[in-house]
Image (cartoon, rainbow, N blue to C red):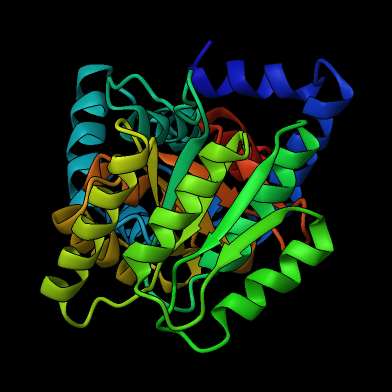
Length: 326
């Protein structure tokens, strides 16, 4: 039994209500990608009687259109051709499951996949959020704050994006809505806000401190200096913080999102990616491309606009949600 069949069997009957809820959320959130990407892959075996160059050309086009990325697709096809030759596979229908298994392997790539937050054992866990403007960074912070609060944690949101007009107000609106604490200081230096915010989190016994930062990539040197300063002042309060630096990317921007990931990876230590608006794109292959091109694990995905529509990323549930109709 292949990897995908094992996953399919695992989630056809979820173990409990919470797992059932999450599986349904993946199912619903990946609907656009499944209808576009997976249906084309499914039809591929019907359109070809044999596995030949025409088959591989059409497969290549399908994968690229799913935003998996040209270089990733080329490597994937090379591996697939070798497997077809080695195992003497001639029936396109038999290749369907192998394609899904190989896509699964693209993401895993012999790595230990870590999608858990690195919680601090002593004092507040500090999570720094980076990303360009418009990707949903502030909303993501609020959704995570809500998730942590429901887990019984005491959460502080820190508004250190002093560059974007209205960012503090947006965070305050979310704070009022979900009932978590907030710290910001209008017009102050971002590093100063971070210092005071983390100090407040430590002094007042918060479990989680979520820090919003400005999203400017136009001048990488300035942003790098700002993030370096922010990291430095945070460490003055908590020496091993920030415990996570999460890069927020809008899934609907496709390959531009990968460019953002590579750029931020150059200027700061990104430990994980939050991929927002995955439900709004038919190109769900971006998940595979980002991990393959950057080596940074996806830790959360946005599967809707509601407060509880941010889910911990699970590669098995992702593969199931994308290909369940195969």
